[in-house]
Length: 56
Image (cartoon, rainbow, N blue to C red; front, side):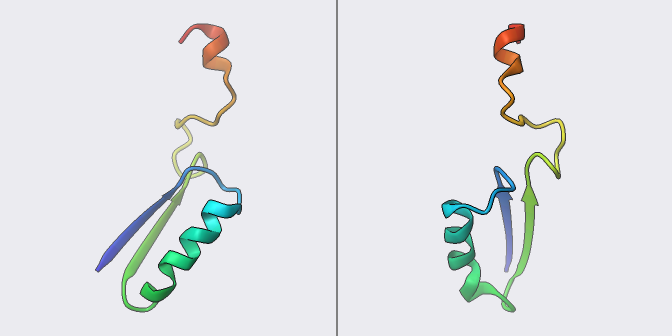
């Protein structure tokens, strides 16, 4: 089984901890690939809100 996880932020808050609990039973049984935004996709929204001020 292959599992892909896309983390919307690199912060290790509640959602990150829930993701870890969810993936725990799959460790060693599945191929798990994780991406963290914006690090792994630098053109993705970083939440700076400059687009709102620039009218984009």
